[in-house]
Amino acid sequence: MKVKDKEFTRFISAEALEERIGRMGKEISKDFEGKSPLILGVLNGAFMFLSDLMKAVDIPLQMSFIKISSYQAMNSTGKVRELIGVSEEIKGREVIVVEDIVDTGISMTHLLECISEKEPANISVVSLLLKPDALKKPVTIDYVGFEIPDKFVVGYGLDYDGFGRNLKEIYQLK
Ligand code: IMP
Ligand code: MG
Image 1 (cartoon, protein in one colour):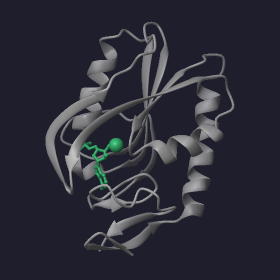
Image 2 (cartoon, rainbow, N blue to C red):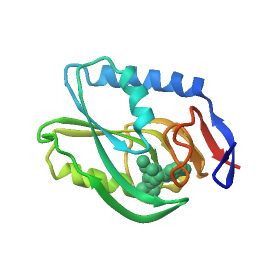
Image 3 (cartoon, helix red, strand yellow):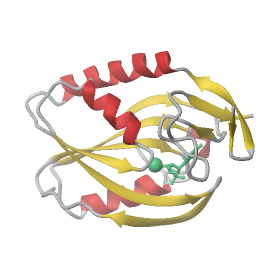
């Protein structure tokens, strides 16, 4: 599979994603029963995961989006910009942040600081993917879909220079 100028190979199938996300949804439904959490999906990457995950969660909840960006093409710039802030009332809420991937952990650390300032009752973090070997900041992810090696991936919301987000499966750089 070619995305822009790079070759990728299939890594996580649509079936494996569906199965794992279904189980994550059940677990979140059980853990947040009676709590009506506020789900904050991190754009752009988490859009496809959030959509499938929310279909697998069957408790009352509210949902919104935040947008940050730390990547330029394939290297983390180490700099994080918050593009779209949170407009919802966060104070006293059970917040669940939904991210596509935690790589160095810099974006998530920054995001959690920003959200904490708004005094939620609690913040939980869900990430479809985690690269444990790439972590530079100690960050606790409460729900991880898949732990993966420190190799670049695209598809299922994740992009390479803006391309590849629409792929149904996740591909790894060859
Ligand atoms: P971090 O701040 O290094 O943890 O990077 C987090 C963000 O970088 C994620 O939300 C993704 O948007 C992007 N990212 C990290 N690794 C990858 C990858 O392998 N493929 C595509 N995007 C990635
Ligand atoms: Mg992201």
